[in-house]
Image (cartoon, rainbow, N blue to C red; front, top):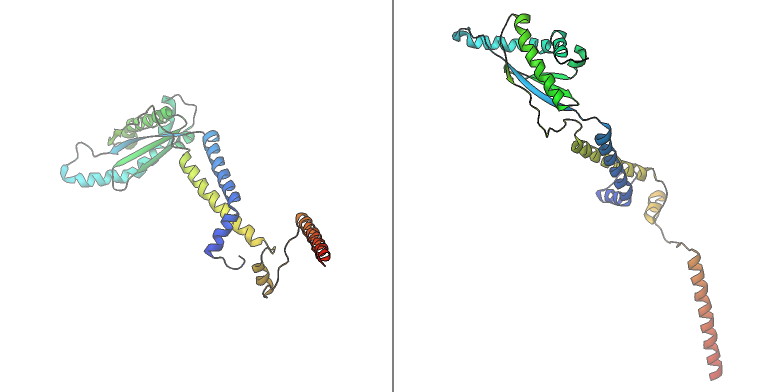
Amino acid sequence: MKDSISLGSLFEIIKKSLLMIVSIVISFVAVAFLVSYFLITPTYKASASIVINQDENVDVSNLNTAIQSNISLINTYKIVITSPVILDKVSEEMNLSMTANELAEKIEVSSEDATQIITLTATDTSAEKAAELVNTTTEVFQKEIPELMNLDNVKILSNAEVYSDASPSSPNIPINVAVSFLLGLVIAIGSALLLEYLDNTVKTEKDIEEKVGLPVIGIISHIDNNDLINNERYISDNRRQVRRDYSAKKKTI
């Protein structure tokens, strides 16, 4: 396999290195599972939604204009939600010893294009605390926005709920194991190919022909101690048989 490799040769290399490949793959999978299960702290996510709606006194004829205006406010509101003016009050209401910056790292704010809906997602090591954090943030934001923006156009669309069988969002053990399996398989096969490429030893007649460019006209078999012992026994048996044949022939004469 030095300059090129055929599909058949690839399978032969894999077959020859199967034990090493399986060992590497199992090691990767085992490490991924153990790290994901024992070392990574599970985290939970909870989401709540708010809607930016039009003022109740708006003229119906200008409804589309009002909606577009509300959509244009969304980017501003996304910044306000994670600002200290909101999160400091959230920390105070929840009796947390966390700064606004620390809370902001736990909250993700997103919105769909061409909609008036903002989704807040909180992450915490406790599902209950994640839900409480996101719900408190939406409530504080709804209360504070009229004073901050002189607008009362924020309504809570949905609050986060906590379920007894809530599953952690991270780590995703099946995904981690699957990725480690594929990674281990690629590395194992790559290692097998690399070792084969770096192996310059001559093992077969074909290797000799490829290296020297001449055909092999003879092969010297490997002889070990058992072969020598068997050969000596064979010679001794032949000698005894020859003596017996000679004695029998002599008596006949």
